Image 1 (spheres, helix red, strand yellow):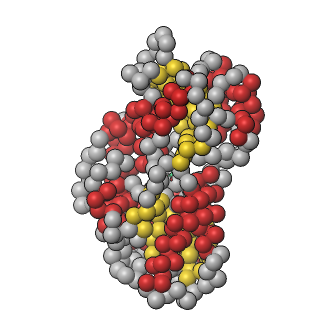
Image 2: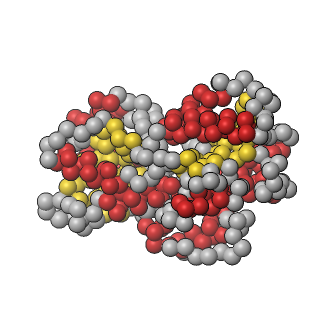
Length: 340
Ligand code: GYE
């Protein structure tokens, strides 16, 4: 199968539920980020090695495109972009390659929190500044220069607070509420942060019962598989928490296949994260009840931080992206203009 056919196949399988026809989307934009990629080398450019963790979700593709669109030759960069396809060993190999080529900066999105100490020490010993993007690491901050990303814990808390308000509005704040969770890649800082944030609100509501949580790997296929298992196992599910939109789409497909009416008020409350265009469209239709935004556009900030370092200026130890919470009340104006 050609790359184009593969992309169309995935697209057509994943979305038939919500679209009547399979409209082609802009292939260049979605396929560009999954390739290893290099801008034109030239004298006097800032050499940056970037290790992307994979291309598991629409969010990730948007993040890769943001990086590639920001670290351009026109803006003074020679970018070497590597896709690790969800494997930490591939990321470590890519980073070691950047070190041996003596690039000026290394940036990467760490797939999981743990396991980076050795390679970060190697970069530090080689005198190469490292900038983390999106996810965080458990290694000491002295081993990297800065981090640019999203406040995952706050995202989880926002989801929990929204749920408390919603249950109150429905007169269910004292009922037993059965919750299931589809987790993102286990051990990633997005999974850990969102779980800690959401759990902290759960702890304030003894009537919320977490029935089960399982790794849905941030993908539609795995989300559908995990949700199918939950539907067979639990009769009474009040709330489904999906730690990203791609898994939510899979979970909704499973619910539909199980015979649930996704437009009914009696369907479980669906909470999702990312606020992709497709996610927001489902919010406007009432299929997803709340979508907590996660902002993938960290490329411009990465470019700006590197330029600051080049000028010899100090930079902050961390930079947070701006994020919102979307419900049926505010999603429609954003859905149309979403790039991911
Ligand atoms: O939510 C998900 C993904 O780390 C915030 O990774 C990121 C997550 C995002 O692929 O869709």
